[in-house]
Length: 424
Ligand SMILES: *[C@@H]1O[C@H](CO)[C@@H](O)[C@H](O)[C@H]1NC(C)=O
Image (cartoon, rainbow, N blue to C red; front, side, top):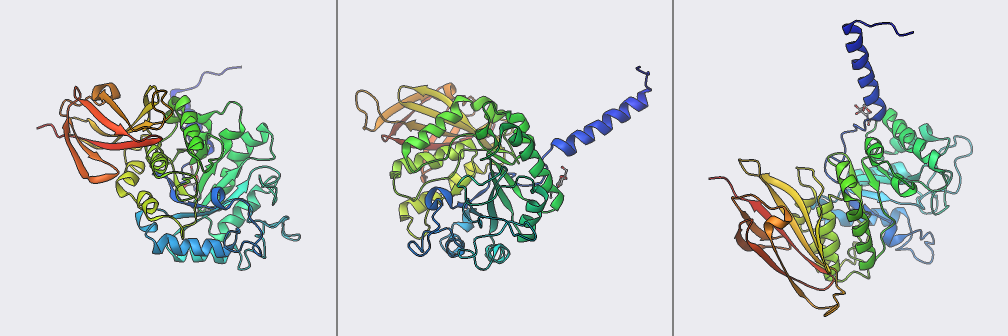
């Protein structure tokens, strides 16, 4: 039977239930206020475990120490690449018999994860590790977290882990929906803040992004990236096809993750490398490289360390961008960024993609032109335009009615910052 309640009681109940709601559903670990930047093993080094045959390529503490050194000595750390993340295949096949703790493979990680974490931290970097919320890791090399959430979260915390990439293999959709929040809670209870990267949506037929965003700092919305332009384009279209829901749930502390930057490997041309970097920055994606930092070509290293593009990715407005126009083989992607002017108009980063394949000339540079207001650039004060790939190139002042003209290489991109003018 319903008993009428006093106003005070109702206010109290509302207050308490809001508090409970937040503690259950809010991921407030204070991390990833801008998209994390770093390096991860998987796309380049996969699950290579044979260190006798391939000592430089196997997943081992030697690879991680070498990469930590290079992140610092080659200048990547100084521009923001901070998280050094070991993907799958670091584990021993089974848990410790007595304690049930996870263990790293002893041949490849003889010093243990605590010591490796210390080495990473000593270099001013942060330490990331892979795990799986189900019965086994995806490469089937080690145990998943199933039935050991508290223990594994404690183990990670005791190793000084700062970032957890949580995969979802060998679990049912129901296990997944319970597992991601529960492991997040287990991490929270350790008291050690850890970025929580979830593959959750990838394992759902109908992902609930609003729910996922309450529990994760990052979420993978598409399949694994491969070392090819086709793969980059495919992930871009996964994003643009559902960009409204993806954008609605992202912002400081919670970001869409289109997977690693494959720049610096074998298959991306220079122009395709520019495409991936620029569009990832427009999306507000984590910038997580996967490459052998010792063999990255100088021009690709220069791209990866382009401070103007990194600043777009890390922009403090915290609003992910989107594809606003698709004509023939052209796409235009736009992100609102700082600075704002004194009447509240923001600046923009605008990327013009030539996907290639245009019937009349599939592999030609092509001209594209558009009046700026069609892209949503409407400040009557106008914009000062800079080429983000070449900051010495200032293109001058453009008003919303002006047509912007650009010439784009095949399977390439041009990328500009439109800085809004002050209201004099
Ligand atoms: C745990 O969650 C609470 C409430 O959301 C939050 O204030 C706290 O910072 C979290 N701690 C860690 C270590 O993530």
